[in-house]
Image (cartoon, rainbow, N blue to C red):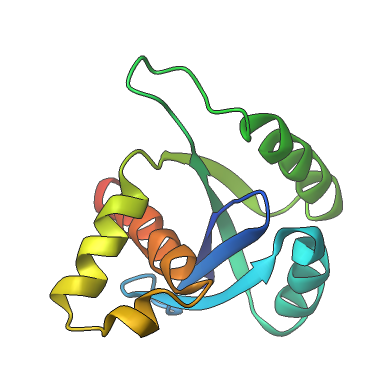
Length: 137
């Protein structure tokens, strides 16, 4: 089987997570500068077999999308043109940053480590991917 990759797209940084090849376990991969995200995928997809990309859908309480959605759609268009065989899915990412922060605290990560840029982004991507996997089955 191929991996499923998820991203928590951000204005500056994007968290990336992926499943194992059996599509059971979601793990953090990296945090990438958003401006270099396509370069990352060019390298990653050269070495890894990926069938699906899950992109976080930033919704507010009123179910309206966040301003970053414009940039996300541009990325999705570019990605789908370059990699037409990879299926793209959207997954609600409401509360993922808060859940990721709570997970880091609950896991015992020291405050200084939690403040490192990118840790929260990767964990948020894992939560998006786990959410997708939970209803994919």
